[in-house]
Image (cartoon, rainbow, N blue to C red; front, top):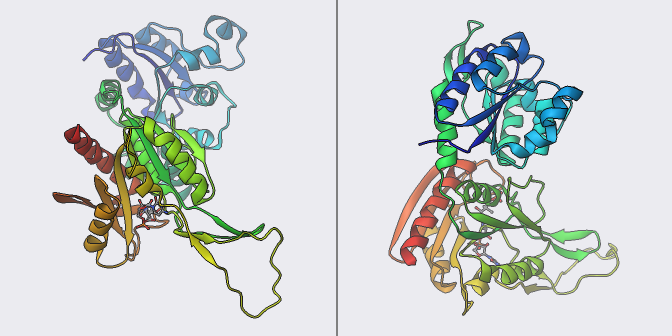
Length: 399
Ligand code: PMT
C-alpha cells in the first residue's frame, strides 16, 4: 500500500506522547504520504518544531496569527489541502475544545474549517480519560463522524496504569492506511431515524421514546463504509454524522413524503424510525382548553412508510425494516417481513433494560426469508457497523 498523493495534516497537542510523533511522520513519509504538521503551544513544550520540520520535509505551522506563515499556506488553505486530519496525541483539552466548536488556535480552527475526515488519537492520564466530561466529549466527536483511534492501556509516564496511552506509531499509520484503503461503495443508502410527532393542537403532540441514536449510528456506519447517505430524521437533538445528507421532518406524513420522493434514487432503504402508527384525526387550531374531566382524541392511521417504499413498482430499493417488539419477537418480526414484503428485518426486544429505545446499546436479530443472524448486545455505533456490513452482503447477493 502506498499513500502517494495522500495529504495528511498531523495535529500535535501538549502531552508526553508527542515524542512518538516524529516516528509517525517518518513512517507516513515511507509510504509517500505528504504530511504537514500543526503544533499547539503545549506541543512545543514537549518537542521542537524543527524536529518535525526535518522529518516531514515541510514547514511546521503553529500560529493562527502569524502573517509570514499565513502568506505561505494559510489556515483555511491547510484545512482545504488535507485529505485527512489526524490529531495525535489529542489531549483532553483539545478534545473538549473541538467538541465545543472553539477556534482559538490554529489546530482547532483547522478542525472547524476542514471538510476532510478527522481522526482523534487520545493520550492522557487514565483518570482524565475516564472522566465523565472526556468520555462525553469523545462520544460527541464520534457521533459527529470523527474517528476515535485508541487509546491503548498500560503503564503511563506519570506512573499510573490504565487506559490513556497513545497508540503506537505503526498502529496509527496502519489506521491511516486502512482509512485510505476503504473502498468507496458507490451505493446510495436512505435511512429513517428518530420518532415522529403527531400534533393534537398548537402546543401538544403524540410521540414516543426514540432518540434517533440507532438510526444516526447506522447513517454514520454507512457513510464510513463509503456509501452516499441520506438520513430522514424525526425531531431529535443529535448532530449530523460527517458527510451525511440530512432531511429533518416532524410528522409521519412528512417522513412518508420525503421517503417516497427519495427512495427511487437509492439502492437500499433502512427504516429505523419509530413512526407513529396513528395521528389525531383533526388538529385543533387553538390550544384545547381543559373544560371537561376527560378528553377523547379520535385517531386515524398513518401511512406505512416502509410498506409503501417496499411496494414501489419501479426503482424499488432493497428494503430493510426494524421491528420493535416486547414479546414473541421472531413471530412478530417475521410477520412484518412478510406483510411488508421486505428483504430483511432487524428485530430488537425493547422490553429489556439497557437496549432499544433511548439507550446507548442494543442487540438485534436479523431475519430474512431463508435465515436469521444474531447481532449481540453492543454499543449502537459498533452494532450499526455490523448491521450495515450484513445488509450490504445481502444486497450484493440479491443483485
Ligand atoms: O432511536 P433509538 O432511541 O436509538 O431507538 C432505536 C429503536 C428502538 C427506535 C429502533 O431500534 C427500532 O426498533 N425502530 C423501529 C421502531 C418501530 O416503529 O418498529 P415497528 O415494529 O412499530 O415498525 C416496523 C417497521 O415499520 C419499522 O421499520 C418502522 O420504521 C416502519 N414503519 C412503521 C409504521 C409506519 N407508519 N411507517 C413505517 O415505516
